[in-house]
Image 1 (cartoon, rainbow, N blue to C red):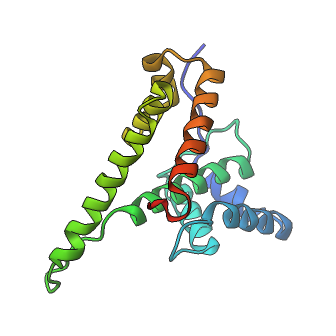
Image 2: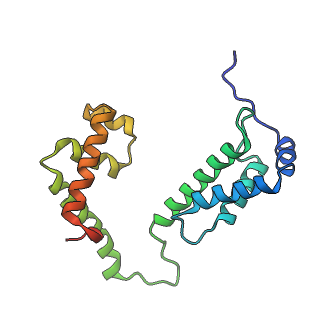
Length: 176
């Protein structure tokens, strides 16, 4: 038995996409609408077109055993996630732009100050503080389980407790 996954050829992908009915295309558009939420400057048609372009170009190989809608949904989810990460990054200063010392330092100071204040709020709850640190470092849930010695239920309970504590302490706008 081979561990290799078979993929559709580009010709097979093109034939499959060409055979889609209007209802299938509308369903893909609805899926794109779902994934593009929270992605400023992009819309569902951009997302669907980008997903189709990646699939047709062969950049995203299509496993034989996965259906059209689930596969394209995951491709769109991945692209939307990538776009969100790109939008979160600080914009680069162009050649003609002058850095504004007040605002450039202000953003970093606010975030680090906020993180310090949030950590101080959670200091009496080690599991919640540990989860907060794992969220900041973007480690996996499994790594958090292992490092904090929690099971899934304990992790979820501590995460909810952390969220409630931070919401209660920092309320709207996360400032105090």
